[in-house]
Image (cartoon, rainbow, N blue to C red; front, side):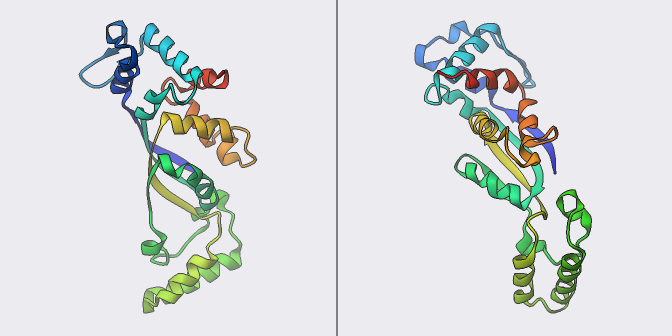
Length: 204
Protein backbone atom coordinates (compact mmCIF):
# COMPACT_ATOMS: atom_id res chain seq x y z
CA UNK A 1 0.00 0.00 0.00
CA UNK A 2 1.03 3.58 -0.57
CA UNK A 3 -0.28 7.07 0.24
CA UNK A 4 0.91 9.93 -1.96
CA UNK A 5 0.11 13.51 -3.04
CA UNK A 6 -1.21 14.46 0.40
CA UNK A 7 -2.77 17.91 0.74
CA UNK A 8 -4.47 19.30 3.84
CA UNK A 9 -6.50 22.50 3.49
CA UNK A 10 -9.21 24.58 5.09
CA UNK A 11 -7.70 25.52 8.45
CA UNK A 12 -8.27 29.25 7.99
CA UNK A 13 -11.98 29.08 7.23
CA UNK A 14 -12.52 26.25 9.70
CA UNK A 15 -11.02 28.31 12.51
CA UNK A 16 -13.11 31.32 11.51
CA UNK A 17 -16.24 29.15 11.63
CA UNK A 18 -15.16 27.66 14.94
CA UNK A 19 -15.55 31.11 16.50
CA UNK A 20 -18.88 31.97 14.86
CA UNK A 21 -21.16 30.71 17.68
CA UNK A 22 -19.71 33.23 20.17
CA UNK A 23 -18.71 35.93 17.65
CA UNK A 24 -15.22 35.65 19.13
CA UNK A 25 -13.20 36.26 15.96
CA UNK A 26 -11.19 38.99 17.69
CA UNK A 27 -9.74 36.35 20.03
CA UNK A 28 -8.23 34.34 17.19
CA UNK A 29 -4.43 34.28 17.42
CA UNK A 30 -3.47 32.04 14.50
CA UNK A 31 -1.36 33.46 11.68
CA UNK A 32 -2.10 32.88 7.99
CA UNK A 33 0.18 34.06 5.21
CA UNK A 34 -0.51 34.70 1.55
CA UNK A 35 0.67 31.21 0.62
CA UNK A 36 -1.90 29.62 2.91
CA UNK A 37 0.69 28.46 5.45
CA UNK A 38 -0.41 28.76 9.04
CA UNK A 39 0.80 28.89 12.61
CA UNK A 40 -1.93 27.75 15.00
CA UNK A 41 -2.22 30.14 17.94
CA UNK A 42 -2.49 29.01 21.56
CA UNK A 43 -6.01 30.43 22.08
CA UNK A 44 -7.33 28.91 18.86
CA UNK A 45 -5.84 25.52 19.68
CA UNK A 46 -7.28 25.55 23.21
CA UNK A 47 -10.74 26.30 21.81
CA UNK A 48 -10.32 23.59 19.17
CA UNK A 49 -9.39 21.03 21.84
CA UNK A 50 -12.33 22.09 24.01
CA UNK A 51 -14.78 21.63 21.13
CA UNK A 52 -13.25 18.31 20.09
CA UNK A 53 -13.60 17.02 23.62
CA UNK A 54 -17.24 18.20 23.76
CA UNK A 55 -18.33 15.88 20.96
CA UNK A 56 -19.12 15.77 17.26
CA UNK A 57 -22.01 18.26 17.46
CA UNK A 58 -19.61 20.90 18.81
CA UNK A 59 -16.56 20.23 16.65
CA UNK A 60 -18.17 20.90 13.26
CA UNK A 61 -15.10 22.91 12.26
CA UNK A 62 -13.26 19.61 11.76
CA UNK A 63 -15.55 18.85 8.81
CA UNK A 64 -14.15 21.92 7.05
CA UNK A 65 -10.52 20.74 7.22
CA UNK A 66 -10.01 18.58 4.17
CA UNK A 67 -7.52 15.84 3.35
CA UNK A 68 -6.82 14.88 -0.24
CA UNK A 69 -4.48 12.06 -1.23
CA UNK A 70 -3.75 9.38 -3.81
CA UNK A 71 -3.96 6.05 -2.01
CA UNK A 72 -3.15 2.55 -3.20
CA UNK A 73 -4.56 -0.23 -1.03
CA UNK A 74 -5.85 -3.78 -1.58
CA UNK A 75 -9.49 -4.32 -2.41
CA UNK A 76 -10.18 -5.90 0.99
CA UNK A 77 -9.21 -2.60 2.67
CA UNK A 78 -11.27 -0.53 0.22
CA UNK A 79 -14.29 -2.56 1.34
CA UNK A 80 -13.71 -1.45 4.92
CA UNK A 81 -12.93 2.11 3.83
CA UNK A 82 -16.40 2.24 2.30
CA UNK A 83 -17.77 2.31 5.86
CA UNK A 84 -16.94 6.03 5.71
CA UNK A 85 -18.37 6.61 2.23
CA UNK A 86 -20.92 9.21 3.38
CA UNK A 87 -18.10 11.60 4.28
CA UNK A 88 -15.68 10.88 1.46
CA UNK A 89 -15.21 11.35 -2.26
CA UNK A 90 -13.37 8.55 -4.06
CA UNK A 91 -12.27 8.60 -7.70
CA UNK A 92 -10.86 5.15 -8.39
CA UNK A 93 -8.68 3.69 -11.08
CA UNK A 94 -11.18 1.55 -12.96
CA UNK A 95 -11.02 -2.22 -13.30
CA UNK A 96 -13.92 -1.92 -15.74
CA UNK A 97 -11.82 0.13 -18.16
CA UNK A 98 -8.25 -1.03 -17.47
CA UNK A 99 -8.37 -4.60 -16.17
CA UNK A 100 -7.14 -6.98 -18.84
CA UNK A 101 -5.44 -4.30 -20.93
CA UNK A 102 -1.98 -5.45 -19.79
CA UNK A 103 -0.65 -8.55 -18.07
CA UNK A 104 -0.72 -8.51 -14.27
CA UNK A 105 2.37 -9.22 -12.16
CA UNK A 106 2.99 -9.96 -8.49
CA UNK A 107 3.59 -6.23 -7.98
CA UNK A 108 -0.12 -5.64 -8.61
CA UNK A 109 -1.01 -7.42 -5.36
CA UNK A 110 -0.54 -6.58 -1.69
CA UNK A 111 2.73 -8.07 -0.40
CA UNK A 112 3.12 -9.64 -3.87
CA UNK A 113 0.85 -12.45 -2.71
CA UNK A 114 -1.10 -14.09 -5.51
CA UNK A 115 -1.38 -17.77 -6.39
CA UNK A 116 0.67 -18.51 -9.54
CA UNK A 117 -2.27 -20.39 -11.04
CA UNK A 118 -4.59 -17.45 -10.43
CA UNK A 119 -2.14 -15.00 -11.97
CA UNK A 120 -1.68 -17.25 -15.01
CA UNK A 121 -5.45 -17.64 -15.41
CA UNK A 122 -6.08 -13.89 -15.15
CA UNK A 123 -3.42 -13.15 -17.75
CA UNK A 124 -4.68 -15.87 -20.06
CA UNK A 125 -8.22 -14.48 -19.93
CA UNK A 126 -6.84 -10.95 -20.28
CA UNK A 127 -4.95 -11.92 -23.42
CA UNK A 128 -8.13 -13.33 -24.95
CA UNK A 129 -10.06 -10.23 -23.92
CA UNK A 130 -7.59 -7.93 -25.66
CA UNK A 131 -8.07 -9.93 -28.86
CA UNK A 132 -11.85 -10.26 -28.76
CA UNK A 133 -13.13 -7.44 -26.53
CA UNK A 134 -15.69 -9.97 -25.29
CA UNK A 135 -17.22 -8.37 -22.19
CA UNK A 136 -17.91 -11.81 -20.70
CA UNK A 137 -14.15 -12.37 -20.48
CA UNK A 138 -13.78 -9.09 -18.57
CA UNK A 139 -16.64 -10.17 -16.34
CA UNK A 140 -14.82 -13.45 -15.63
CA UNK A 141 -11.63 -11.56 -14.70
CA UNK A 142 -13.52 -9.35 -12.27
CA UNK A 143 -15.14 -12.40 -10.68
CA UNK A 144 -11.85 -14.18 -9.97
CA UNK A 145 -9.73 -11.12 -9.17
CA UNK A 146 -8.20 -11.69 -5.69
CA UNK A 147 -9.00 -9.36 -2.81
CA UNK A 148 -5.29 -8.54 -2.54
CA UNK A 149 -5.34 -6.72 -5.87
CA UNK A 150 -4.00 -3.20 -5.34
CA UNK A 151 -6.36 -0.48 -6.48
CA UNK A 152 -5.58 3.24 -6.47
CA UNK A 153 -7.89 6.19 -5.97
CA UNK A 154 -7.84 9.87 -5.19
CA UNK A 155 -9.60 10.28 -1.87
CA UNK A 156 -11.10 13.40 -0.29
CA UNK A 157 -12.29 13.36 3.31
CA UNK A 158 -12.20 15.56 6.38
CA UNK A 159 -10.67 15.61 9.85
CA UNK A 160 -13.85 14.43 11.55
CA UNK A 161 -13.94 11.36 9.31
CA UNK A 162 -10.21 10.80 9.83
CA UNK A 163 -10.71 10.84 13.61
CA UNK A 164 -13.49 8.29 13.32
CA UNK A 165 -11.30 6.09 11.13
CA UNK A 166 -8.46 6.32 13.62
CA UNK A 167 -10.41 5.47 16.78
CA UNK A 168 -12.36 2.67 15.12
CA UNK A 169 -9.39 1.08 13.33
CA UNK A 170 -6.23 1.80 15.36
CA UNK A 171 -6.31 -1.70 16.90
CA UNK A 172 -7.61 -3.42 13.80
CA UNK A 173 -6.37 -6.92 12.97
CA UNK A 174 -5.29 -5.79 9.49
CA UNK A 175 -1.87 -4.12 9.53
CA UNK A 176 -2.92 -1.89 6.64
CA UNK A 177 -4.98 -0.04 9.24
CA UNK A 178 -3.06 -0.47 12.50
CA UNK A 179 0.53 -1.26 11.54
CA UNK A 180 3.55 1.02 11.74
CA UNK A 181 3.08 1.92 8.07
CA UNK A 182 -0.70 1.74 8.19
CA UNK A 183 -3.47 4.25 7.61
CA UNK A 184 -3.89 5.13 11.31
CA UNK A 185 -0.21 6.01 11.73
CA UNK A 186 -0.47 8.18 8.64
CA UNK A 187 -3.52 9.96 10.09
CA UNK A 188 -1.46 10.71 13.22
CA UNK A 189 1.10 12.47 11.02
CA UNK A 190 -1.38 15.02 9.62
CA UNK A 191 -1.10 18.62 10.91
CA UNK A 192 -2.37 18.98 14.51
CA UNK A 193 -3.98 15.56 14.33
CA UNK A 194 -1.98 13.70 16.97
CA UNK A 195 -2.72 16.34 19.63
CA UNK A 196 -6.39 16.55 18.67
CA UNK A 197 -6.79 12.77 18.61
CA UNK A 198 -5.78 12.73 22.27
CA UNK A 199 -8.53 15.22 23.11
CA UNK A 200 -11.07 13.12 21.23
CA UNK A 201 -9.96 10.09 23.26
CA UNK A 202 -10.71 12.02 26.46
CA UNK A 203 -14.13 13.05 25.19
CA UNK A 204 -16.70 13.43 27.95
